[in-house]
Length: 328
Image 1: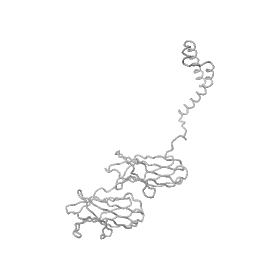
Image 2: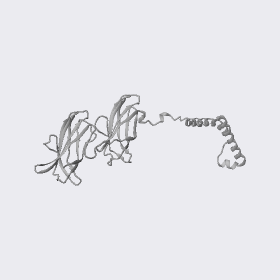
Image 3: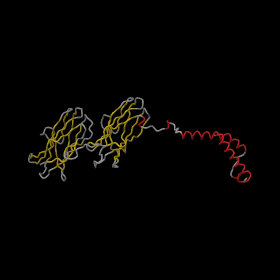
Image 4: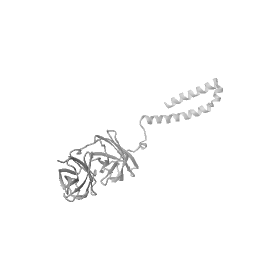
């Protein structure tokens, strides 16, 4: 086939040469078309080579012959990630995952990093610079962990200040992954993650962690040292599976629709302060009481936030929200 094409092309070139030589010799000279017989002879030798190269390239394209080594490496070439939970806690969104090393070799210090444009929900809200990651340690900008071949690790992402309308139902999560063993550093995007929301948003106490259960015991009004005080008594149960030490509860104000009121907290019902610290063993329940000062009798409902922190466990959030606390 190439030989036939060569013959036709050579013939055509000779025809052009003869035409200009006979009918327009001046034009031939002026346009520098110096295709003499020697040039034609050279073309006969080079044209098959050029055509062979063009044909090879065309066949390569037709049969999808892209060099695999030119393909940009993808996260999915080395890791398999499964989202195990995506659920709201207080004002944050927690995305738990499992990640398996499918690269075929042991990897040292695989790094997961937060992305600046870290998430987008189905309402069109985009979240910037509000992401944390944990691979079993504290929430941070990044986490590193060595992963053996075919080993699966677990971890979590956290999106802070997520969706104030409480209406988002799906999430696109963005993050970065790097491994020096693989010479890989790329951005990852996982779309259509379904969001669960089991929070208490009215008439109760909303937890700050999946492993802590809060229960309202009751509310009361008393006059203490000549002051109208409103009391909220509640319990917290440790279901984290970890013995919690140095658990701190702090607060400053509770609110009505129009006013704010200073308050303190106590773990024994008597010694009230703006903060209290205690130990909670796994499976144990502790009782705490909040005293809210100088609340007029006309105020029937209050709301507020207690901050909870500990250095012995990674909490989803620090905010324990109290909604619609009613006082008769």
